[in-house]
Image 1 (cartoon, rainbow, N blue to C red):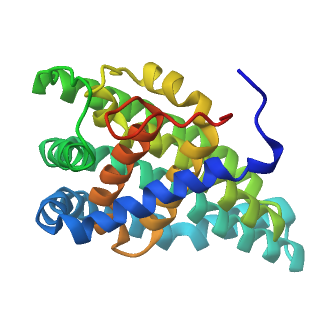
Image 2 (cartoon, one colour; image 1 turned 30 degrees about the horizontal axis):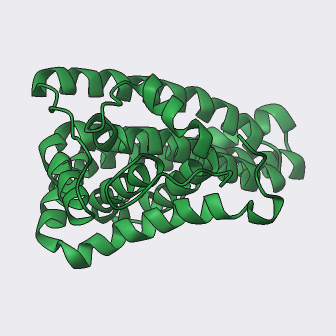
Length: 265
């Protein structure tokens, strides 16, 4: 493998963002399928709305306790309290986004499988699609992998909370890290079905397949992550994210109309 070209370092992130944008355009090319794909997101959003509301409503209280507990009274304690409140929201946002994705993928598996299959067919199909997993096995595997993702997000959120306690710079740093790390975790979840149709089934296999395209994967996931933070954006972005994930997978695996684009090519 040759060394990556220094002048083309930006190509991989651009390809990742481009896959996310092409996924959004699927609303124009196949609106009926996308509307059906939005239904599971509505269900998940209702289930998570109460949890998010509680986290946001208690952010000030927790921030005040942490800030004044560490910094005492006075302006330093007030500054730490504000930083802690923001850190709670940032850390909670990471967990909420990934929990939403996990719930929605589980609830809407048939819808998202159909969207991914239609995107593949529209772009030229597959060289050889492997038989679909039995629904029960695929659901159990998806739930197990989703729980791993949520557990990782909780651990990461604690680290982001600690980073966010640094006034001013900490909040921006925690948000950026949350988008990048959360984006990678999100991409691993979203690519589950398009990879499974190509015989790449387990989470470990997906990690291995995407490793040479790390920048592309993170950029795609981060773009989707940011869309999910827009109020009600997650509902509309979820089916588009599945379409984008299918396009992402087509770009890193052989296909009749799209050869894999190596990051060092």
